[in-house]
Image (cartoon, rainbow, N blue to C red):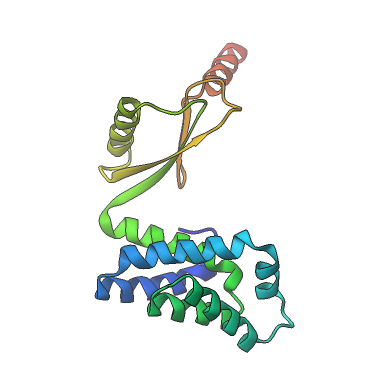
Length: 181
């Protein structure tokens, strides 16, 4: 689940409504878009988190942003509520929690994979298949990140699940085995 537990009730509520209306994919994209917009503009973010700014002012700005982005009524209502409650800075966490609820509902899991260079299509498919077996058969969505700090191999993370198949990790395990005799 998301790092910010305060986001979960908002995400659950909007997920259930979006699911009833058949709008889960759309709402997910819209939540990501509004969260990115707020994070991309530091002055906007700062305005929305200031405790002395009235809830009505925050709500007005949030609704204006949602309207300019062309968001659906459901997303506009959620953004307005979150801003009014002084939680606009948590919209990224709400979007993340919404995405996780959607993934769980569809039986899929996201795995962040850090590699030194981009994986080929075959490597990506093979890794996804292995991770799918390791993670109980859930569909695996790889979120690939190029990490120039790695010399080779990969590191895969999903929640508390971690596979360190990096060259550095292998060398460290070898060093520990040699040190322990």
